[in-house]
Image (cartoon, rainbow, N blue to C red; front, side, top):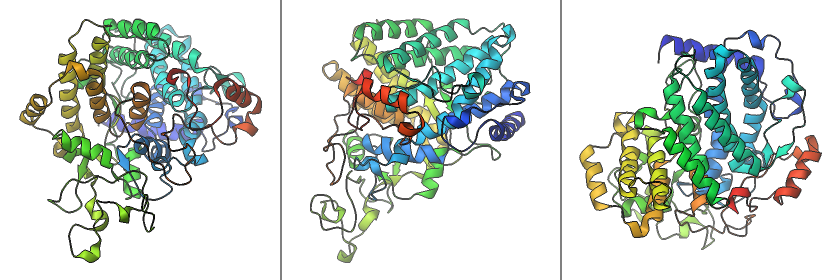
Length: 508
């Protein structure tokens, strides 16, 4: 990272102390930003990007404890890994809500206000709008109806109890903002510089990102409004999406003065997660070379065995005690590996606190184009886009470091052994999507709810709150009923009970 990048992150971290507190209520947002409009927009953008990437807090609770285990990429035995057993933990369920609304939403609104009126800041304004979509589409995909149009406006408009907008209005607005951004971004106007950790102000790459997000969000509507989904997907592809792994949207974390990768911080602190049996078995069945990028055996040379989801340790329960599972090897037997050393752990190469945090990859775009072709919405060749997506998903892993590189010959062999089958097109495409977004568990969870792939077997751990079904959403922040009672009640009345099993608008 350049010296300017380091200065940008360091300054942005100082800025975060001025613009954001560590509490998580809407009331505290009604704070005068004093001289915020005098601060360089580049520093504000850096702060926004690293906050969307996230800290250990929300990545631990929302991304890994909940999303990664519900989607069966990872598994864990302790009960506090709530998503593995479909428990409700109030602070875990609302972790991203807490961080994004208290710290990020007002910073985004502040930068939008600063860049709205100056014609010289048109690129800065629309780049900020794209990041706003990244933030809110994560939140609405997790919770459904959420504060959107009035959120973060405590110090700009004095709104301390924002209304919850219906997801049916949030999605069209996000898509329209992406379209406006992709249209308005111009190489003839000034842009961000070193403060833009993602693209260094390159407006052409930001256009591609806007259109690629439009493709993702448009495809999200397939169950609720196929006509609108088709229209937005076609518009996104025509506008120009990612063309290679060089276009990937990510935040680097290799600057010692900056924020660490939140997932990496979790792995540093918590040694409980293992690779899920579901995911390990799928990769073994497909002889997938990514298996030993994502995973490693605690005992070198041992068989690749994943940990089943919904298990616990130290009990005699025949159904849920790991000691009674067929894969368990008692250490008193003298056999090695034994105990928890039987089960695959996350590979060190993807556990770094200095690893990049990926928002969207070229592999995702190619697989979504393959699905669009299967649906008849796009004239491209589904088999070609499938192969492009699989290849890109394997090649981009090199961004984690040399140890994650997969040889081109191994990729070729994989595609030859796993050719695209039109009769199984939707299943194959979306299973590959699942395999391509490991650690971006928000997206894995959303795409599973959208498509039903991969076909997962739920757990039914005692005390779960879903009746043994995989949750369809996370619940709102627990004290919303007190802090924002009228708007919270209106949202619950409109969307349905504030439970993990309630389906949101696009998931009907």
